Amino acid sequence: MSTPLSSATSYATPTQLLQHYDARQIGDLVGDVGTRVSSASLLTDVNVQAALDRASGEIEAACLVAGKYTPDDLNILTGMALALRVGLCVDLAYWFLQIRRFPKSEITEGYRAAMEKLDRLRLGERIFGLQEVANAGLPNTTFVNQGDIDALDLTTTITKRYFGRRAKEERLGP
Image 1: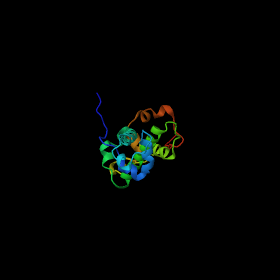
Image 2: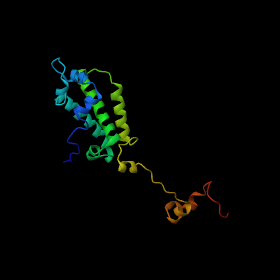
Image 3: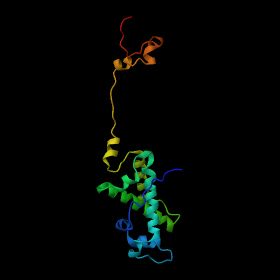
């Protein structure tokens, strides 16, 4: 049996969704009886919450790959990293609300951009602002000279005479 690894809450609130998108458009997308849902009702609407939850699942699916982030990491974000996380979540949620109402909708630029950002987060080309994640991306390189390699007494060193000299090797003697 596997251990669940997910946040208990979505990564954006209905209030944040309404800060990014017009409440009238959201109200039209979630209303099932042909009337617009009021702004106040959107804050507790189950369809809005379902879209935010689904969007949060998409964020986790991308960010939890290879242990790059944990749900706790995503929940403790502050500042501009928090703004990025909320923006991704509401852009995805808006798309999910749109295809809920209009299943054959063309993919929007906002959805495409959000998915591209998630893909870059998954690949590590972009990161959320956590110091540990930033440090993990720094390469640690060391240089080894030929003397160090010869001192290891590797098979290539032991059997060197069977393979001849390389063009760039020093020629010591005949």
